[in-house]
Structures are given as structure tokens and as C-alpha cells.
Image (cartoon, rainbow, N blue to C red; front, side):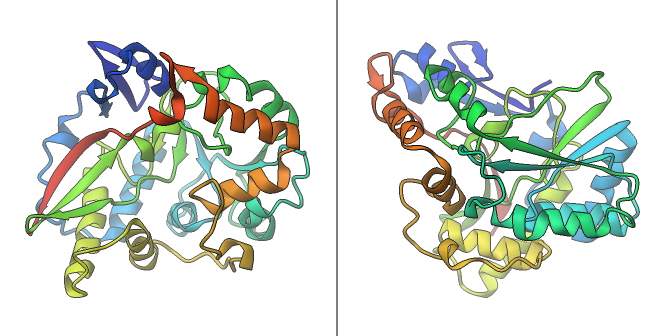
Length: 332
């Protein structure tokens, strides 16, 4: 079962561009549903902070996944979010069957792209250093997305295999059976402050690349343990109140999440990743993957798709918007 879907005129879609196509220009009438039929999530009292500590809730979540599935796969980048999840499993001696690491290089030069600095400089060396001790019974797999991948998908089919414009496109191979899960280390708390109250927002854009795949488990956000996401929201809210941060940016939220709620992996950002001008993409990894590894032909194909491909006669770049599925009141 998928974790969510878009809906227009009573029909559900697991591809966002299909929903846009069906709407025939009425894109504001599209809705997104996350965790269908999950009253444990939608009816949870988000205004009360759970008394259980954050570390204990993360341990409970790891045990919950381990007890539910025979085989669990952790998608691990080495960044703050996934490193915290990995640490939760390791320090509580909870087994992970497989760890997935992914790299992107349209020129097949996987060992040199700066867009994968975490993978090359930290993630793979770190996993190798503990493979014979803490991960002695864990399979480590590297997925490489290279020339053949981009050559196949940089066409009109791009918009019907993806749900956004990112060039770092997650693909989740299937394995036999149903008693397994793919663990992704999302979501961060996304708070807003309006009219004297705090709210936890949930948008499709945070998880849209996972929609359409089966056996997905988001570690931090789940109807099976809503206390975990709620706890993070209240910790973040209290720090913002204490520091009079009522007007804040997405960057401010991310920084607070990393400082308060996540472990710090020993990754030193390269100068190229600290520049404010990231080019045509919001995220530096996206821009570097595009700039450093795309051939001129691939660059032209991608730019042409984004600029000129039309759905119902309108450029697709003018129709891709975010859809808010929940807005939970978490108090004053």
C-alpha cells in the first residue's frame, strides 16, 4: 500500500503529473491524502507534548519496525536525518538487514562528483569501518544512477515516473514478498506561526518522491507512533518561543532541527556547498549533480522538458504546486 495519493474529481493518482493532467487546468482542486484511514494520526491530540523522551520514542520506533517486518532496508545518505536513525538502531542493538546508499552521476563518474560529497567522503568509508563490528550481519548495497538511467528517463516519460523536477530521483527496486519495508528518514517537523498559535504543517512536496512505491516506512512520521513527530514539533516550538523566533525561514527550521533533534555526522561541508547561489536548483546537491555530471546533451534535454513540455497546453513548470494535507494545532 502506498503512503499517500493525489485526488481529483473522485479519482486517485499515485503520480502527481497524472493528477495535473486529469484536472485540465483546475490544479487548485487537486488534493493530497497522507496515511489514508489513520485516525491514530489525524485524531491525535497534537497540542499536548508527549512526556516520553525523544530518544525513547526513536527507540520505540526502531523496535516497532523490527518487530513488524522480517526484512528492513534503511536508505542512508550519511546526513543528519539518516545518521540519527542509524545510530538509533546501533545503540539499541536493533538489527538492520540492509543499508542502501545511492549515488548520482549522469557521466558515470561516481567517484568524483561533488554532489555526493557525503557518500564519497563519509558515508561509504564510515559504513566500511563498522561493517565487521556493528554491521557484521548487515548487507550494504550501493545504487548507482548513471548514464543509462538518465538516457532512459530524460523524455516525456520523466513526468510519469516522477512527481517533481529533481534530477536526483529515488528509485526503489522491488523484492519478493510483502514482509519487508524500505525505511526513509523523513519527515522533519514543519512549523508555522499564525495568529498567536503554532501549527504543524504536512505537505505533499516533502514526500512526493516516495508516493507510488510500496512498503515505504517514514521513520520520523507515522500513524503507528504519532508521538514521535509530535515530540519533535514541541521541542522545536519551545526553542523558537524561547528565542523569540516568530518570523522564521525554512532554513531556520532546518538548522534548529539539526541542532536539537538530530545527531551530527562528522561531515565537513566543502566550500562549493556553502555558496548561496546554487544555480537553477534550490538544493546544492541538485545543482552540482546537474552541473558536474550531465553531458551537454542531457542538460539540453532536461531544460527543454522543464521549459517546453506541456500538460493540457500549459507548460508543466507553471502547474507544479504543493498541496497541504494536514495542519495540526500544537498550541500557543
